[in-house]
Image 1 (cartoon, rainbow, N blue to C red):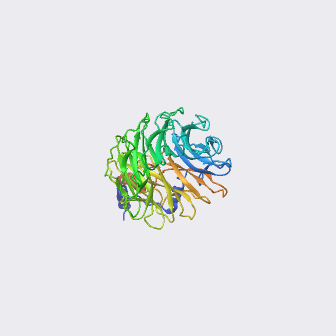
Image 2 (image 1 turned 180 degrees about the vertical axis):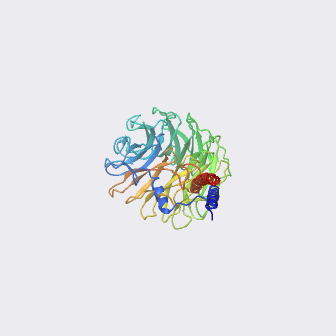
Image 3 (image 1 turned 90 degrees about the vertical axis):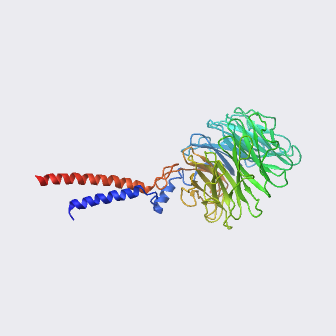
Length: 525
């Protein structure tokens, strides 16, 4: 073959290959070695996490919130005194550097025990913290404290009183009030007779309680109301949901409380689900329009627990099918749902799933604003590795999807893993999740917060020392996967090769053309 014809043929082959690759929608798969190297770079801080607190004795059950600048504030119950549980906190910046005193700032070291701690952002780099408090020595009460971005506690030493009514107040939940303060709700025992009720209180940015002393009654119906969950409007108002046994079984109810502490819906709450048998574990998120979406574990089938959800608007009207839409009704139990707004009026829900009958896995589903499920029927598998995966937690990836973390026993011990699912229900990271911490001994009870940049920061309590539990944390980034852009649609790796080949083909074509022109001129001479 003549050189001229060979080069023209080579140019045509380059162009054809580039066109085929450019219009291909299937990414070229990275080799296992390349993929592992890429995924290992997602854990951006020290391997297996940085130490948040390794004080003497045990530190347990951390909670986490964003500091608004890519870092987080972490709070936990702490037994360093050796005589009772206290509350401590630490701030970690986006680079994984602790910002306050080594092993944390004391939030409350009052006598007797403090525990069941919760946290929310104060909106300006600090946080508001609430907890159960037994300083009275006779019953549990509810206290709160604010800490600023530099680690200075802002209110009364050892906390501001939220409720010290007679008998026990327990298991507080907290959300921002949108004005530098917070709204707190809790279980309240025997104030109105021998049963548990739901109360709430608002505290402003200076630590002043704004509603009735010892809280506004959210529900005081007959029998027990338990385990409230809360979602803020951001205008000093909130919607609260809970388990309710007024019928003799456990149902799901909700109530709205305004900025002045007045309940706005039907006395003792609007029924969200009163189906047969038991409904429990309600969780709540905003629908972005003044209402909320509530999910729960549901035994209406009489044979196993399933996952259902309901939307209720700002005036207390339920918007979907009576008693909720089914998100997962596959065989065996689905429990412990967690929920996240998808940013467009719907929600992403995750749960523990025992459909295999041999161990617990993690599944997920998205429901849109009108109650249509969007992903695979009965949920997308997040992790189906060997042994149990438990205690899933969720935060936004900033692009309509979610980052999920859980406690994982695939190794025979308890480790921490994470996975990203995008807005279409596609799993974006390595199958069955990226290892966040696989240090020796057990790691427990992960909690998660967005890093405000498409990734997340995860915290847990950790027994790698072999002596006691400490608090650790790790950043998980959302880098390009198979050439994809973090937080966006996948950009197929094959397209990158196509661009290179296309440019290469044009370059060779240009060189060939110039060569042929020069050669032709020489030939004419």
